[in-house]
Length: 492
RNA sequence: GGCGCGGUACCCAAGUGGUAAGGGAGAGGUCUGCAAAACCUUUAUGCGUCGGUUCGAUCCCGACCCGCGCCUCCA
Image (cartoon, rainbow, N blue to C red):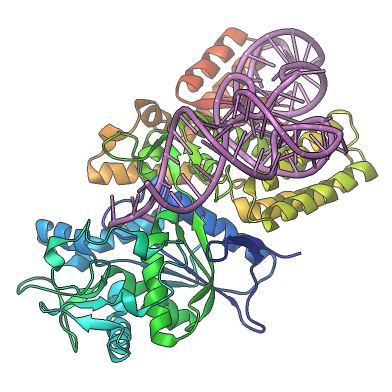
């Protein structure tokens, strides 16, 4: 078996496989770095990460490219308003984006491609399109792609151009296009505006051209898989296809994967509805990075995910359950031998996990397989039927799960601490929940001291004092767990 | 208006032409100085509504109702 994914282009679930002897070429549309990333962005990037990690687990060599759009209208406008060169403006948000990916356990692709570092490639692609008669120069010096020259236009998004109202939404600034649907490849700039001086004249690239130029640069004229959010299907990806295939005469991406938008509290996320959240917003509210990642994977990428605060709490508990289970196994203390029934169940969970992901990245199925195993192994252990030789195979399955889902290792404290430091630097501590601030006001030394005091009280059978200390810690978000081999603490 | 997706228990949610995964939450129990964690039991004769096809439909077909997305910058 191999990975099968829904291909937007064909409308079918198809096997994804590289060309013989080559790595699988993946181009995933990245962010426009004009602001902090929001959870909608990260739903896409986390699912790309799930895909990436799963393919690595299947030992498929990858060549994965993600673009960083570091020049566009919003960036130009915001940078100008801040009186900064665009590079200074975008550097901050690019850095923040990469930190956010790291916070969510998202692996870096093989190549990060910045638009501003690939201007020559874009210019030569546009020149090629002009030579081939697919692009033209408008009166104001901008270049446009002539959609009428590409018969396949609309094949990805299944749009019939003839049926679309032409002219209903013409941008008044772009009066010099031959057809309203034609899109800008190169935007001529007015004197004083940020620009590149090129053989096309002074200007800057249109949005779509960067992906065509950079995908081709790193992956060749044809490659295996192109990924993005569902909104990018039209017009962005459609335009990429038109440009690239017109220039090369070859199929651009063979397989297209689109991640569906999420809803927040049942509504499309938008600033006006007040349900717009960046990753940092959530961290400052006290939610853990692992819970956010886990929630984002709870619904397969092609289904709409309703992101809610209740869901975040549920995911927190679900992750805790998995971590507790892993701790229990590592702690040991099981009878010698091997329970063959449990071993069989372990193998079954392993197979079901992989089968779920192979089936169009069904993360819900894959997760269910692991939770089945957790329940079975826990109940076996309670009955004394989990034996020492069962431990390693189960831990292997857990490791396999975590190589894809990446929530078991607890990096949450470190991530939250970084978010608090960022808020401090940016003067945004007011956005941090008081509860969270209290929770992180205790140093580990102080916590250890209080636990030692409580242990002394317990030894003296002064349970009232012991409970008072537990209670005090609890109000600051520190949970204590007594066990035969000592007291463990964790942050709520 | 055009194209597309979805409506499954208290909440989130997977799934299949043959009788409903998983997570969370609630209740009861085991364990514990008290807790926590963990485990057990329990919560859909039912899968938006109405028809149809079928031996049999939540799953196929049709109509309708509701929600959502894209068609314009957006992951």
